[in-house]
Each structure stands twice: as structure tokens, then as C-alpha cells.
Length: 299
Image 1 (cartoon, rainbow, N blue to C red):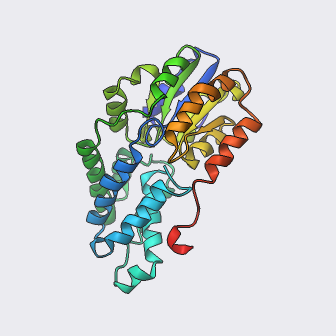
Image 2: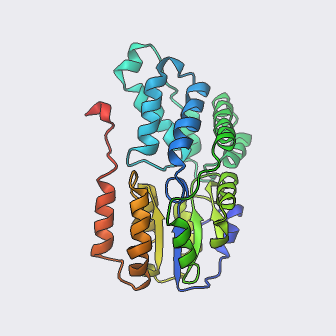
Image 3: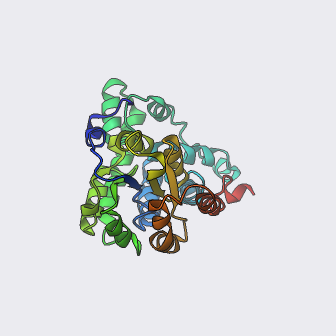
């Protein structure tokens, strides 16, 4: 079993109680929180902390493309931030205004260092060994993002049929939250809407990557056809495939229909051993068509 952060011990020590296992992503999957978090919390803090006011329009376009409307939807905030900088740097409109987005060399080193979780706590620990003014600025940004989310994002209920699906599954499967969101926000949201009771562990970014969450909690403990990841982003599917698990997509822009189909149809196929194969492939093909690789300003 892979090395893992101390915070991930509850995943590593999870004892199966059922034959089936289901991991559920949170933002944009169980909750309609992706739009408000990125448009109203992440983007303003990117512009503020990285001095992008002169190109705020383009910064917003880049951040929304990366985090919401592309195949990188749902990735960890640190590689997403670097990608935003890179997209801005190559735009003629940004160059014409004389703005140079950060190269983010120290942030890239933090991302590449596999010894530290890509979380605020992981960055703090990394900074004790590799102090740098750029990382001070990065910490101010990420703390600012979390503070804005805490202040702004509340009262957003789970999508219709999430509660019903979890309630149905509790008697059939061990369920955990598999997310790249900070634990504090996850616990607050799942407890606020009284659905934390359906899951055995809430796993956020402090517990490692989504792939690690599934590896620690499910791999080699359940038959691979009995492990299902539900998510709204390609990273969720990648985490499932890394553990030879099945994937059910919640299609961006069609979340209600996706959960309705899951509750009415897909969950029953999964429990009957009829999900793998053509049915899963059809769901994934629909999902892939919704998230492009190229931003619209390049087309």
C-alpha cells in the first residue's frame, strides 16, 4: 500500500461492511458549488493576490476555462493556478497590456514534490523547509480563497436525487467522500445538509489525492466491479481507473439529469453487476464530449 499522510489513516483502516464501495466527489458532483466557488471566490482572489487587475477579464476567462469548462475541471487548486498563469502568458491581449503573469517557479517545485500534500497544511510544512517570498504570496492567496468560500458559500443544497441515492446505497455499499476540497469546507457542507450521516469517511485534500483515497479505502478490499467512483471531472475518472474501478459521470451542465439516471437506473445496474462494459462506455462518451481541451479563444 502506498505511503500516505497521517490524516489518511481513517481511509487505510476502513473495514468493509458491505460487498460494494462507492466514492462520491463533492463540489460540482454532490453539490452545485463549483460555479459559485470558482467565479466568486477563486477568481477574485487570483486577481487580487497575483496583481492581475489590468487583465482581470482574461484572468477570469482563463480560470473559468481551467476549473469549470475544460478537461482539467476539478483539478487541485495549485496546478490549476499555474495553468491559469500559463494560459494568460500566451494571450496577445495580455502581452499588449504589458502584464507578465507569474512564472510560479517555487509553486511548480511544491507541486512536483511528492512528499507534501497539495493542501494549505502541506504548503505550510513545505515552506518550513523551502521558505520563499513567492510561497508567502501563495499562502496568502490560498488562505484568502478559503476565507471567501467560508464567508460566501452556504445554503447550497445537494443536487436532487443525491440524498435519495445515498440513502438507498447505505444498506448496500460502503460510501466515502472523495474530494480535493479542504476538509473544513467538506465537513461544513455535508453536515449542514445532513448527508454526512450516509458516508463513513469524508476525505479531502489533506488526505492526499483522489486516487490515493480510493487506493487506501477500496483497492484489493472489494472486487473491482464492486467499486464505483461518482464524479463530475476527468480527474475523478482518472482516479477510478488508477484503481481499476468503475466510473459514473455527473455531466457538467446536466447534473440533475445525471443524478436522476443514477437513482433510477445506473445504481441498480451497478449492484446487479451490469454496469461495466457498454453501459459505462456510453456514459463516459457523453461525458467526454462536454469538456474540451482547447480554450474557446484559441479556436
